Image 1 (cartoon, rainbow, N blue to C red):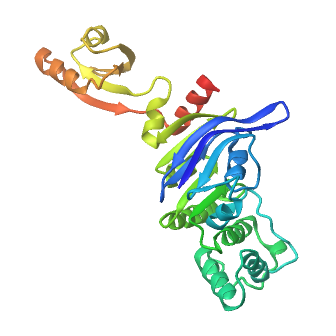
Image 2: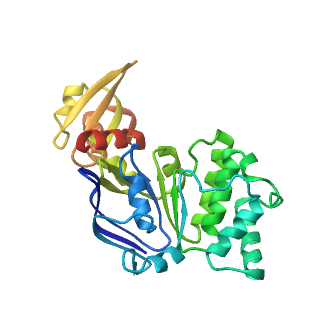
Image 3: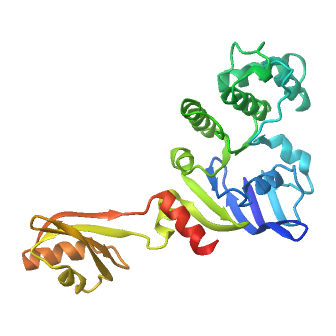
Length: 306
């Protein structure tokens, strides 16, 4: 559905997007993670045809963003971080205007406006003036204009920025519902947003794509990666460290008879540890795999490569 190859964008001497390539399949929901100034918004604006690229190839739904921009725009809904609302208009008037810009008039226009208002929870708000709305409801109106033409691809740039916790929960639930029927790119620097909504994520920093994969794969890619927590009685840490296949053992403390150890190994050592415990008479109270959090992975990858 989306194919980006060797995308670059420069502003004079500054390279905002640096040779970025990725693909997103139909129906995928992908988080676009990165710190402020990483190049997320620039990339998304290029995907929507809002900005020209300096170099590279970008296709959306099979259409080239540079050669066939109108075909792309018919298939993309875009919610920027600050929706382009006219504060003097009412909700209904604004959405009717947005539908007309998309080429819908008369009964079809009214039908589409009514449908998106129901989708985003704005029924009954038709007469409210946009300038009087809270940030959460302005985001809903912005999302409605992005949906009015029923796009195949939905691009959301920091959709919960500035919302209070209750509004964030409502917006996340709405995004989950929308993601069930279309391809979605969600740009954010809020890691919990990605974990709550996106099966897959891409991490961008300094204009470069640093990592891509499922949430679990990103956590595994963090410096240090996977480690194993062991609570064992009858064994010293040096005995565990001497086992073939164990790379490092770090003592974490003692709890009664049990030593708490952090074990690192190039391959999963749990079967090896259980066999050693059975052969040597050790008592194992706990043995579990532990991955770094997404936040730790994010900081580790950006710190290592950014």
